[in-house]
Image (cartoon, rainbow, N blue to C red; front, side, top):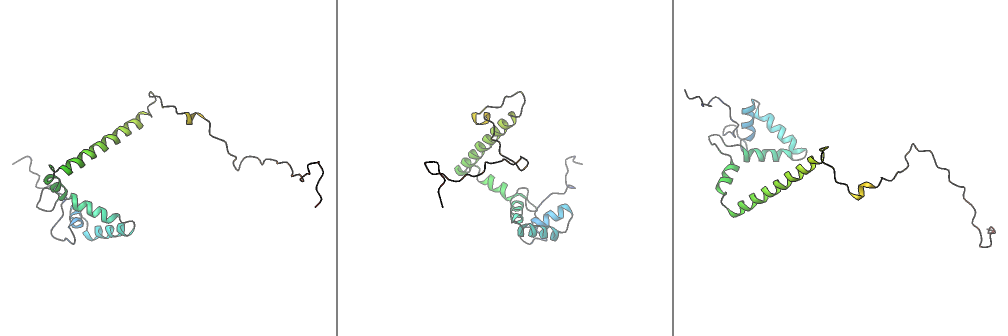
Length: 157
């Protein structure tokens, strides 16, 4: 007997039987052991409340291989276009963006290290202004005075 025989292992696949659109809900239902109509209802509800169900279904359609195949639609698309200059350019830009994100993440985590001094910016050295709150005592303002003429007398109204 071959020790690498995985025939008894369940695999997540889009099914051909029980399919309504692309077989994602039917395949997921078979894999989890749930009625596919429950999954379809959950996707419909998430579609009505924000549209997330359509995105989840589309991702499942792209990533799950069809029954009887070993690769998904996305894997087939990538393998067919891996030498295309547009794909190579997109891949290079994605790798550059990922490198920038990792660099930014590593800088933000290193600032939390107590052995690494945080940079001091001039704007952070000034104390924040203190504004009155509802708990502060009421300030007493001087009583208003009547307007005066330039010679110091009170005008007659």
